[in-house]
Image (cartoon, rainbow, N blue to C red; front, side, top):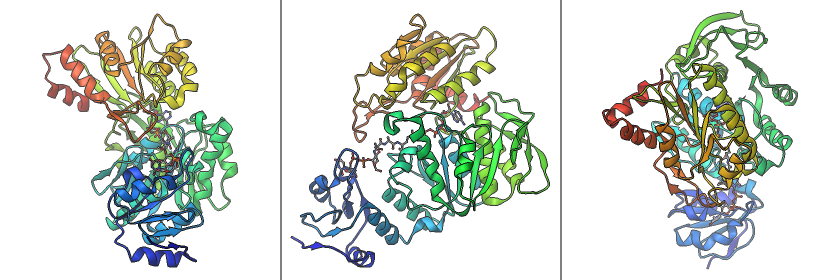
Length: 509
Ligand SMILES: CC(=O)N[C@H]1[C@@H](OP(=O)(O)OP(=O)(O)OC[C@H]2O[C@@H](n3ccc(=O)[nH]c3=O)[C@H](O)[C@@H]2O)O[C@H](CO)[C@@H](O)[C@@H]1O[C@H](C)C(=O)N[C@@H](C)C(=O)N[C@H](CCC(=O)O)C(=O)O
Ligand SMILES: Nc1ncnc2c1ncn2[C@@H]1O[C@H](COP(=O)(O)OP(=O)(O)OP(=O)(O)O)[C@@H](O)[C@H]1O
């Protein structure tokens, strides 16, 4: 049994760690691997100190705790979790300070903006993406549990990035992360706001609290850093009022009549992307209008592309180079992925998973659909969004022609709880409940005719369902894309799976 160790300073804690063969740091006993230091955290529902035994059994070689505890491995006691973050940051030689960090927040569009901006910056430097899709750099993808990871995971990833020669990180910053201080050790060079609507009321309690959480991203801005705002979002006035005086502000807009620094003119958003005139009038520079094109479909992706262009400009100072790389963007996995069917109908697999996202997707689809053609919709909401379910269901009923409410991460609720709530204020003649997600997709596809569109929303490329509240125990799910491809092969056997797969890629007309 080791004595309790109570370091008087960070330095002495570091010295203790240096004497051990540390392979990493972990706050979750379930994920501990041999050589890890297990960090005890008092969370919202549990106390990490209760899980020391499991951590040691799994191979933890030391414990960092907030109070004296007994363990068969050395214990370092620190004052609070922030001290641990400081310790781990020092252990990795403050990797966050060795990167140009861009933080992206907003209700919708974080993944899209962060992923495409990292892609664009990769044409000029080595850039990493961190967010809902995982942590991607140096051609490797590291899966993440959270959109914005726990600070110790983030520090570990940033250490790996620095080791791999990455120069710039574009990361999504969720409202939960801001509220829980997951990015408290960051000093962002640039922050980007996409749009702020209403979401996560289960966690934040009210829209005001949610907005306040988002605004705290500004507290994490470096002195003299850049704030990128969407002039078309009414929340921008509030953001600007909260901006530090030293900040450089760059605004973007998709409407011609605003005085945004970067704006799209003469745009005609379509399913094949959007051609537009990019007008820039930044920081007193001579204004410039240049032809531009984003291959991502729909108006909201024009907005996302403008946000990414502004981010590219903030980092490189070269908007013309940004226009060039924007043209060649690869699609974002699970967002607006199109599959053309042999009968002339189209299936679109998308990540729209809250009221605002569904509304903008349905609006855009309706605007592009010829009269008389139908929008079919397969959707659900996660258990966390139960209180939004009635209103969202009513919105879907008003905007789509035929709807299948289905299962989407019930997170411990009865599987029909969210679908029933979604159906409550919907037109029941047109809005069915089919809990088996694959069956819902199958039924919806069977009813499609030439020119109709089916939107399969909410999961994107996710290949799991959180049936239980415990997110460490996901159930495997084949995936929406795969389901659509299988059903297409059943419905149109004359086309091989391979042909369908090809149409998935080429179908982005
Ligand atoms: C509600 C919430 O946000 N919880 C987050 C929070 O967990 P917590 O600290 O409260 O955890 P806890 O369950 O009370 O446990 C306390 C401590 O005991 C540890 N523990 C717990 C159980 C065990 O068996 N062993 C063990 O060691 C836990 O790892 C933790 O260190 O801190 C953890 C580490 O940072 C997060 O992983 C965890 O995210 C959970 C998984 C989650 O689902 N969060 C969602 C709501 C979320 O954050 N979502 C946003 C994106 C939202 C969006 O835009 O769509 C995100 O950034 O991911
Ligand atoms: N700028 C936008 N405005 C409104 N809706 C959008 C916008 N961008 C994307 N969407 C819709 O929201 C969905 C989710 O997009 P995206 O994954 O980029 O958002 P997000 O903010 O990262 O969400 P999450 O953090 O939960 O993953 C898209 O599939 C699309 O339907």
